[in-house]
Length: 400
Ligand code: FAD
Ligand code: UDP
Image (cartoon, rainbow, N blue to C red):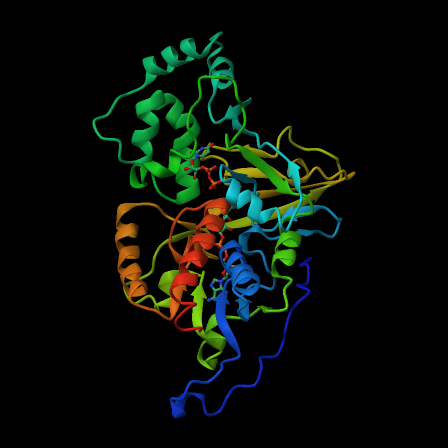
């Protein structure tokens, strides 16, 4: 069921035999080797190739491009996301305009419901959620704010993912919506995670039930993979999927490397492993046209083993007599998906970052490369900024 990447290049160009010993300047096969064909690697490949006129080799260990945003038509012809639901949202016109060179868009505003007992309630918590859960009739924002204030438990310093929720909405709502979900998702109690994690889902006093409030919210009209194919369709770009960096690292293919995999892996885990959270997906197709009222239903209860269920046709707008869903199970082992935001992990990352800073021959970008819990648009923004910096530094020196 994997879409075959069209531009696989099975063989590397011939190596230059004299290159290392002579010490003389030699022309390497590529100007830049990019590891990882997700947003970080692909945006940089595109910029270097088409704006910088550089020859780029882009490799990924997976059998496809697009990183975690990879989508494909399954055996029933339904477009699904291999690695869970990816919804594009941004406030950056620059990022939107950049990606719009490679795709048209389908307007889509994401909505999520949480299953709490027999209730299906809007998340983030809003006035509708409160009224349904407590049988209230809060009529306006002021009434909802008063209700929340009466439950909130102020704390001196808001540090953890528990503090940030309890201080705004109190223990009951925290337990119902956040505690179990977070423990499942991260394998940690919210008291062990930075406040930034649960702060991604702020409570509202109005009845806006959209998951995101960004100015621009849309899905690539024909999917992410097709957008990536357009991005990488350039004569200066060679794509090698199914290729480990370790297997080509010593081939001296380029003077500069851009690494978008885990930074601790690059440095041989010399200070120890950075923790990443992984996921397992159970994909299913059912012989009915619709299973859920919205794209994603969250299951905060720890009695349910998965965190959420996604029905992809809501995201894509595809019309099809069947429907495809995926269950998400969080786990410690497997592909790294999420950096885990907590102080000790940040401290360990800083050690790796210090190693990276003194290396002129390699640049780290992306969610794994810079150990940051970034959304797609933030990775695109970071990659564009990295390119602008490289134009002034690396490109003018090493690649000149
Ligand atoms: P990745 O997409 O992870 O790409 C890195 C690539 O590097 C991978 O393909 C990997 O195989 C490759 N690689 C790593 N090491 C090596 C190596 N040694 N050799 C060869 N290849 C290597 N963001 C949103 O904006 N909206 C969403 O709705 C959203 N939903 C998400 C849902 C889930 C379940 C997950 C996990 C993430 C979600 N994200 C979402 C975040 C989004 O996936 C990331 O921001 C984005 O994909 C990061 O891009 P990247 O290029 O940094 O990393
Ligand atoms: N969260 C929660 N309950 C929910 C939704 C989110 O406890 O119903 C917490 C959980 O810790 C989660 C975090 O808020 O990891 C961020 O949620 P988001 O939907 O942004 O996570 P992502 O889409 O990145 O997995």
